[in-house]
Structure formats: structure tokens, C-alpha cells
Length: 311
Image (cartoon, rainbow, N blue to C red):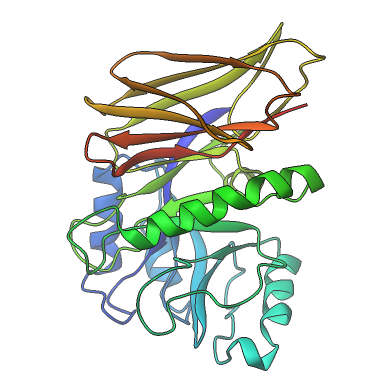
């Protein structure tokens, strides 16, 4: 198992507002040190051949699409060649379930895209039933800042859902993507996954399982584990504590000043200043899970993780 970096929300000139060719996006992905990308043009998959021709042993290209419905956008990742997800409906049409099921039949992953985007049709109004992942951090596009109020709202909403989701065994992982349309946007942010190999099946499996964290830029590194006795779990894992104390440990590089926040089903439980290694103790009785947010000195997000569950 190793960590791979990737951006799963990318557009070329084929999508509305896109100014880059597939070759320019792929070159930017390689320059950023990404290991995988997903092609997510608006409402079509007809450019996938042009993107996939630029793949190599150093860069995996996954087929996908962004469906821009009238009441929210979503990503279909891992589509088979030629499959197009319909987008011509809204929440009142009761048609999204059939589209999600079709993606799942092909082994794909369905992602709620920018759920609080502040423009018409950008806010996600559908029920979350059937969706695998929430894109809680969406990139620059028309903003000058990599972290905005809609991302803050998405993370807060996702964070509130974790306690009940973990309790019932149905929590949805978070991810972050650049939603690249313009030059200079690739990998801001991107998702880092723990997978067995660099293949579409392994990467999408890791995203679906929540074995991932989100980096605000390519220069940020993060390590987060929880240890109870002789058992240690990485992000997305469940650590069986057998009643022993669990020690959360966080190391961050690439964020010279800021804070590390540890959050559980009780909310924010610990905060420490950077630089430095962060360590905090809890128990499974006290905390159902632990997750991490790394903030810059101005309060903007630098990185965030999916939870480690305590049992």
C-alpha cells in the first residue's frame, strides 16, 4: 500500500468555461506531481480518448463525467468507454436514482460535486441516497482564493453527518478536487489516497472507502494515524482498541504556520500550533472517530482528512 495523489474534477475546452486543452491539463498534472487524474467534462465523455492517449506509467487517467443537472452537479468516476450519464433533469423529476444505479453497475463512484456552490444549479438539492463521496473542497475556478465560504459550509455539513453515519455503518467519505477550468488551477486542491496499486479499480476503491485526505496544494504532506496497543490504523481504517487508550498522531509538512485541529463526534476536541508533531489521547468510549483539519494562520484550510474510526 502507498499514497497516490490525484485530481478527479478536471475540464478542458470541451466544457463550458474551460480554456485548456487536454494536453495542457495533463502537463500541469505531471508538473504538480500527480499520480492520477479523472476526466470530468460537462455532460459528455467524448474527449476521453484524447486524454487517455496522454497517460503513461507515471500518470493514470480515469474516465468520468460531470453531470450538470438543473438542481446540482455530480461526478461519475470510472465510466466504461462510451457511457454518458444523463443530466437533463432536476430534483422534482425523480430521475437521478436510475443514473446513480447505472454508474454503480459499471463499478463506478458517484460524487456530490461542490454541494454549496453559489450559482444557479450549483447547489446540490438531491437526497444523498446512493452517493458514495462528498466533494467538500472545490477549487478556484472563478475565485482568487483556494478556500471559500461554500467549502466551509460543505465541510461543516459533512462533519456533522459523520457521527450518525459511523454509528449506523454508512458514513460517506470526503474528497477535494480543483474543478480546473483555467490555467494554474490543477491540484488546488487534490485528494491523496492509500491504494494497493496505481489502477482505476484500486484508486476508486480507496476513494470509496475513505482511505484518503485532501491537500490544498502539492507541497503539503500529512501523516495521521491512531494507535491502540499494538494496533495502528491509517486514515479510513477502523482501530479495535479493546478498551485501551488510543493515541492520535499527526505530522504536517508544507504549512509553516497555522493550527492542527482534531475533531470527533463531540466536535473540536484538541488544537495545536504548527510547526510540531501533534499527539492526543482518547478512548473508543469517549470518541467514535477522530479526523484532522489543518488550517493556515488566516484560518483557511490547508488539508483535511477522512476519519479513523475507533471500536
